[in-house]
Image (cartoon, rainbow over all chains, first blue to last red; front, top):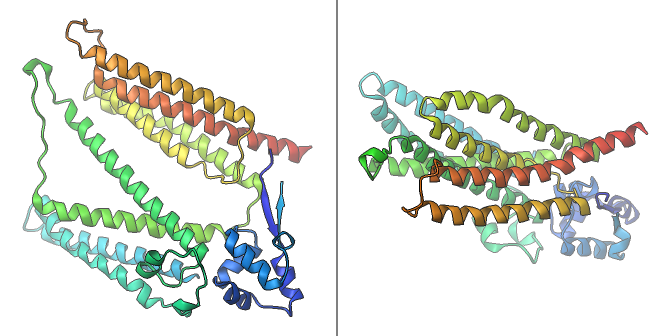
Length: 70
Length: 313
């Protein structure tokens, strides 16, 4: 069995929403900028709550922002 | 550098300074006093490790506490440790704390068993039952507490730094498998090289001590080997689960046998079979951990060679 991964499109959504900065997104969802950096680099998997908050900021569904790859 | 990394480095720096001061003061006192007394006097400077509490004050963050929006934030942790921890920082701090207390417990168990092994050979059945005791000076009790604190903070700081640094390193599946495989095989190599040397050393104390020491050491190395398997994404196949399940069933049977034989051996009417009861525990412990280790190393080694084959294909 392959290792399951969660990919995200946070960077793309940021650029599509008025080139939002990592700092701005971090403030809106209540985490540090380093956490956003780690998320975009795929080094950190967010909690469900954080994932939903990020999707809500972009006005998108959670499945549009985060993709589960098997 | 992340603020928490800075605090971790600061803690390490304070600890190193305190240890150097401790060594310096003890060395200075050696001119007049005995080694034990000098060390005891020198240990008084270890209290300066309390300066670690200034870390969060020196490395202040910019974000006010009320800007954190996280319904799952642990208020106690946030207040005691840092009001600016987000969920990732909390997770890293929790993991680091777990590592610290885990190592502390491990060292505690190791020191108890080590003391037991050291004193055990003095037990003489010819003289009948004789209680062996060790004496600890009450002046050393606070030093033990301070030492435990130092160990905890050292492991906590190291773990914090390594977790933040680990995220900065680019990795792929092949590298993780190769690293685990290399680590596993390296520790297995210790069995071949290190333990014969240890065995020769301990032979001086007697064949029983040598066997007890080797099996305990073997078991402890097994546990360390188990903990190095840090590939979080590895998924065990059905075959792996079958192997683990069989190994655990064998271990359960062995443990039941251990209890039965231990009880039987203490019945006086049973003739002496030449096996010391104290050997049963380390031998069973070693068999248990060996089986667990072999079944957990196997997926790493298999995955590594499988990925190599895919790359070559």
